[in-house]
Structures are given as structure tokens and as C-alpha cells.
Image 1 (tube, rainbow, N blue to C red):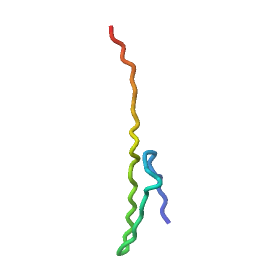
Image 2: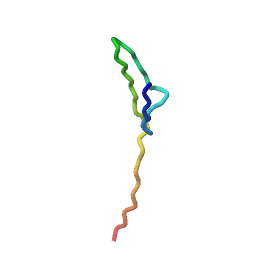
Image 3: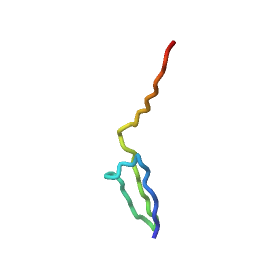
Image 4: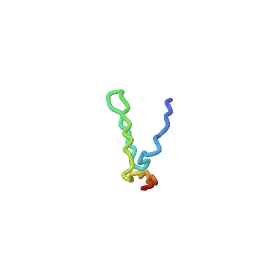
Length: 44
């Protein structure tokens, strides 16, 4: 048994796993929503 943490920006409803020839492949796509960072800029 293996466990791992899914990243915060993972699209959990689109995670896929395939098992072929003894190898497990897990695909974890990122979400489409971009997190924006805002900064206050003072002029003058």
C-alpha cells in the first residue's frame, strides 16, 4: 500500500489511474482556475 498527498491545485474530479504491464500511472491535472496575487503599490 502507498499513500501520497494530492496538491492543493489538483483537479480532484479529473484524477486518473491506469495499470499496465505491472506499472501504475497516476495522472493528476491542475485546476484551470488561476490564483491571482494582489499587491498594493503606492506611488509618490
